[in-house]
Image (cartoon, helix red, strand yellow):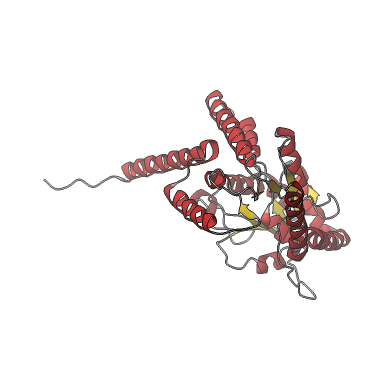
Length: 352
């Protein structure tokens, strides 16, 4: 008998099942890493190789750039002078996710992940001589959770980009940058397309939303119309977009910490609108170096203001660049870090 062709409907069901199974595997892997420091085989092999090297050498200080899955590495290192950089406080994001869940089952599962991750993360930091957070907000969050930790702040460092003497911005170009396979970035784009931009278009029908980043789902890409909504996909060079745009949008509602795309917009003197959470780690001064909005109405109002008010746009552009230079210029960040290292070594000598 001839083989029956698989119907389009059945293929769709199979694809959805495969997608669901993939999501379950990724969630389980992340849960084991966050809550119990169980790494994937490749991470374990890398950590074991580094541990072997560290045991053969003598280092004054060992700095670990500290994603949560490196807790496996930190707990097995022998040196007393191990410091780590908490690029973000991991349990903070899970606490916020828990608070946003709607169903009882989802809330219970999210609460379990939050509590186990928090316990594991704090226990890991206890193995470190010093924990460097990337913002004062995260520093205080860790100290409130575990007062015995030695926590200092170390800003993220970026090279000082020299800007052109004059930047010709498109007068109504609104920018979003982010990897669109991530759920929080998808939520931000839907927020802009469905809630914010319709308000902006009432005042400026020709305003254009430019969305840069790979991984967008098909139903999102279908909104590209080449007039008011543009999807540009992955771009190797973002500098062109930062220099063309009139306004940068950073709608972050989960997570927090250091938002690189916000720092890059400050570096390019690009006025930005973000949420309270988005600005949490960057700490740009509201109404001077950044505009803060946590609702669609306020977000749209700020975008419209930055389109209409040339003087305010110029003031914010200058203040944004100054905030970047004062806080995230790599040379200043390294200088402060070296001073902190020297202080730790002096304390060790005093104890000996």
